[in-house]
Length: 78
Image (cartoon, rainbow, N blue to C red; front, side, top):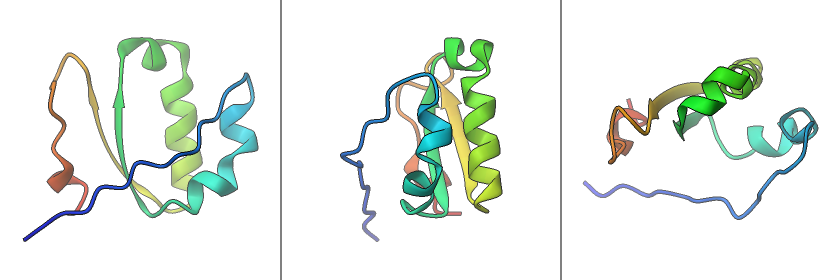
């Protein structure tokens, strides 16, 4: 079985980037693989992203850089 991984070409920057791009992010799909560092968790950015994805009924699999250098895309397909 092959897997298809899409890396979006959109980049959102700025203090309100998540809030203002919610519809664009939702159009990317219903399953999210989020690889993040500890700073996004400490600053609340990761929580904000999770809330945004939850509002759009997306399921989330995440890992931090410390947990795994190679995140497993197959977990997103579950």
